[in-house]
Every structure is written in structure tokens, then in C-alpha cells.
Image (cartoon, rainbow, N blue to C red; front, side):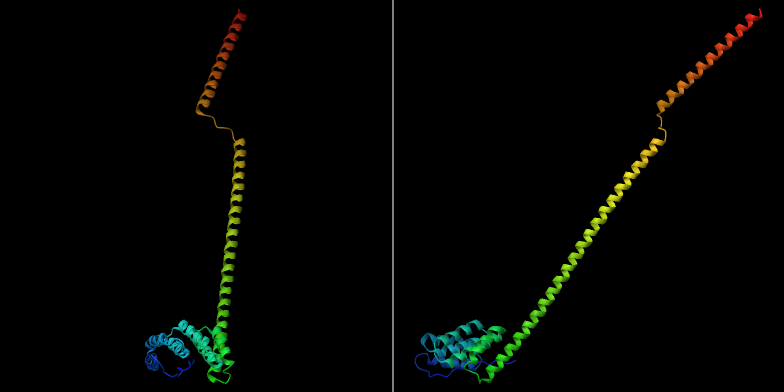
Length: 242
């Protein structure tokens, strides 16, 4: 994968900022981007109306990975020049910064703007096509991820529904068991009542003793009566013999 930042813009070094700008360019070319940023800012303070300083500052910021700052500096450069070709270069570099941050959709917008005036630029064409390819890959990957999430959500939903169905079924079984148990208990009580009706009631010990005493007394009374009748019969017989 290759993204191209346009090299530093050459400009005449005039005034108090010359020394700082020259040192900034040297630092940039040597890969000392943080130092270059500091020196470009110092040069801008001395010569704020030089648009090329903002362009080179943006390039250094992009190299240092300060993407947001780089985009702002390139936008500042665009606002300070009326040349469409120069604005196209800035748009191209903004596209590169966004592409390096994997912001493919925004990068494509800036590449399109740049290609209006850089239609024959091979690097711009290449980066546009590459960003377009990466955006499609990202969208495809996101769609695949969404499909997977939807599938997992549906799977979880089915699992929840199944758990709920099992729960409802268990509740129904439990209710049926309770109903069957209640019916069985009711039948058992009915059978017990019938058995109690059929079987003689058990007497207490006191009742049994009372009945026994009554029978003994009745037996004594009958025996006494029998003896009396026998005595009377014997007496009557003796009277006739005389």
C-alpha cells in the first residue's frame, strides 16, 4: 500500500523568517518532523501571510502523525490561495492523511476534489482506487459482522424462546401434578370416609367396662329371677302333695 504526500513547496526565503524556514526544511528532510513543526510555526509567526509555510507545516504534521492538525493546516493553505491546482494538491494530501487514518469514505471525497484538476496524476488515481477498494472491503467486513451479530441475536432469541417454552411446560406439568395430587387426596379422603362408615366405631375403655358391668348385672338379675321362679315352683308342688 502506498500513499504519497507531495514534497515541500519551494519558495523564496525573504525576511526574518528565512533562517527558521530553512532550518525547518532541513529538519523535515532529515526526518526530524517535530523540530520541523516547531520551526515552521516560528517562521509563520514572523511571516503569517506566506501560504507555503502552512503547506509545509501541514506536511510535517502529517509525517509526525498529527492528522487533525495537518488537515487544519492544509485547509488554511487552501484558504490563502486562489490557484485551483494548488488547492487540488492540498485536497490530495488531505485525502492521503485521511487514508492513513483509514477514513476511507472521507478520503475518497478529497481525492475526487483533487482529481478535478489532477486528472492525469497517476499517484492521485492510484490512491483513489486503493481507497475505494479499502472502503468496499470495510463495508463488506462490516456487513459480515452485522450478519453475524444478527445471527447471534436470532440464536439468542430462539434460545430464550425455547427456555421460556420449557419453563411454561414445566409450570404446566407442575400444575397438572398438583391437580392430580389434589384429586388423589380427595379420593383417599372419600375412601377413608367410606371405610369409617362400614367399620364399627371403636369403644373407649370406659364404655366397654360400662357395657360389661351392665351385662354382668343383667346376668345377675336373670339368675336371681330364675332362682325365685324355681323356689316358687317347688313350694307350689309341696303344697299339692299335702
